Image (cartoon, rainbow, N blue to C red):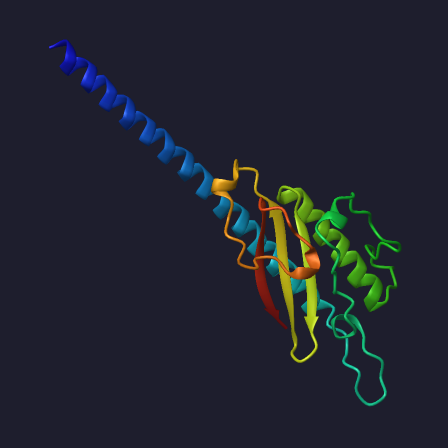
Length: 180
């Protein structure tokens, strides 16, 4: 009788450990899903900002402006984005502000980078305009605080662009192609 009770307690303990592990995995995947949803919203935000400040292409002797000039390209490494985001001057935030497409793009990038930093743990961005298309490649990166050990680290399948210089396995990246 006593052996049966001990066996049932041992089986219950194993079942409870399995349930705890399942709960931890559910929490981890829920948080990862939340981070990916935030990254999707951020990619949509920068896409709308680029569409609003598309500028003009370099045709007929005209100088390219806005998106066409690469004003939205931002290729700083992950470690280089650790500093606080500062607002550029001029701020371009009043009805009387007269700003160039480059100044408006700088403000858009600063505001967008601030949002990425605020909404994601160590949120960082990487934007590169495609010269052959009316599109930009956008990567949004963050440090995943739930990766506790190397056993849980994601597979390094070139998730982040090489320009971000990410070597830490706890950094996750999401890639988006924004067509204008």
